[in-house]
Image 1 (cartoon, helix red, strand yellow):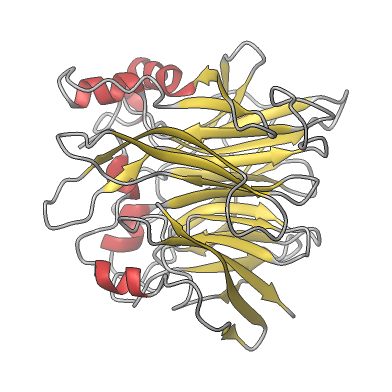
Image 2 (cartoon, one colour):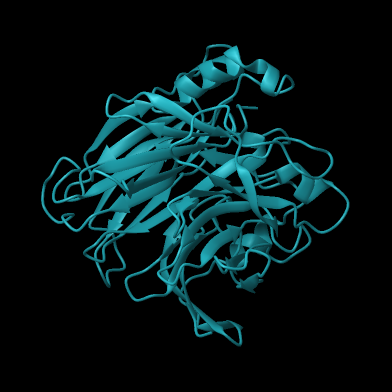
Length: 398
């Protein structure tokens, strides 16, 4: 068991064969609902999670990888891929470490590697060391180096775990910008009182790079699903803790597990949570995940405010050009769904209203973003073993 990996693992009750069967790419377009059409874009991906587009229309996808052998199953099968507009094969792929954790030998392992991905700027076509004409391509890896060392008795060392990487948009060359995982592991060691049962822990999972509202420049935020923190990463790699996300608001009141952030029309951060235990093991059929509104200028211990509720295991989120909040729901429909998963749209002006798309067609989705054509693009198979993941295009007409 490595850190908070259990919150992101496909439970044994999910049929792997059903998940994989739902991810076959190359089938005819399917209608998810009267107001949406879902079509495959790219397939044969290994646990894809993050997805983003740059200002030139290129698509970036993070793949967590496949499980290896041994206690931590460490491999170098994680990737970040860049796809030029209209291309089905990557123009470059940069490899990263992957490892896995499993509590139950009958369950598929959850692969931990490249996770959240965020891109901004129009100058993403030439060699730039990751920063030309505002171009920023950043990716966060899961877990933390001290967490893995502690969990394996010092036998497994992953120096990439929990790092924020900047990638050159033209070549894919990666540079570590910050060791977020170690900083959050240290924070939860000092503040073990926040969650005595689980701390210390760290599992950076979501990342967001955005323009500053004043004075120009770029701001980078990381959501840590293990430490339950939202942090801003400074130019020197130091993580400033903006907020601590409260524990679940439904029994059995376990940790909230923040997985994603998006900037709302008001400039605040909107944070989606997995709320894994309440959604899958509390009575009912889910609907216990929350969206929290966070002031990006605040400092811990300033508390966030609850903005929306009723989601199920949110793993990624974004705002579209019309100001609607979108989130992937990894296990929507419950463990008995074949397969579980969908996406939800919430109007910014009415956070009590939800429109759902893709039930039965978007298997265990991991990432979501709006493409240059206005459609939503979703990674699926984010926790399916092997190379059964894909990117799907969701065109909503109403």
